[in-house]
Image (tube, rainbow, N blue to C red):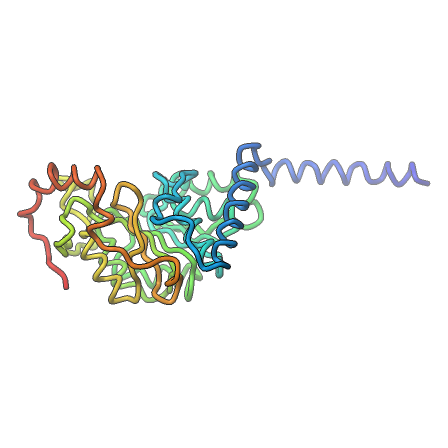
Length: 300
């Protein structure tokens, strides 16, 4: 009887094994190790949170890179672990192919839901293939949407993607219109925002490139007449209820935390402090003079 049962189960097991092989690509040893280590690091940060203390004087000290371009993955994990994961949802505007963006580490290694946009259809196709090949996204992949984001359509795009209310992280990397998109944003309430600023502009100038819904940095003659200065972003953030808590070590990816979050461990820092680095100083000396007479808009 037992032998008969085993024989009957064999084709079922073979079918199940085939399903797993087809639908659930195995995680590599490196991926498993990274996930385990990051979960351990997040738990250590949670212990610091319980004691109301921050392990680092500057958030950039927590940086490491997994899928981010620079060390933003580590900074994001640090800040969110210190204030506690809540919605476990991340929105990224301009995710590229998914292999290098702010959202990917949270999605793959920390179980976040993701809503990712990019204006390039081939990037979205590549991102779908990338996430489809990851074990942790087999049953619940991120939402990937090809769309050219503007101040006029950003809230509608979020609504159509089923994304509203509080989220843990918003990443804005639009290479030009970031200031205007953030200013128009109403559909979501991020706790932490990572946004790119034009770090070649001196810390005492609140300047923004004029808004253009079709602006693309690859179509302009010079690469530096784009985006908004650090101080412009700080002023916008304050008007929206956020404060600057730091930047990555090169000074152009800024981190803003909502004012009802982490006041005891993440105080506000100045625009000048995040621009006090080699890359920003070099840009101010060598790149800023070439575009300082362009028609920038000063914001208050």
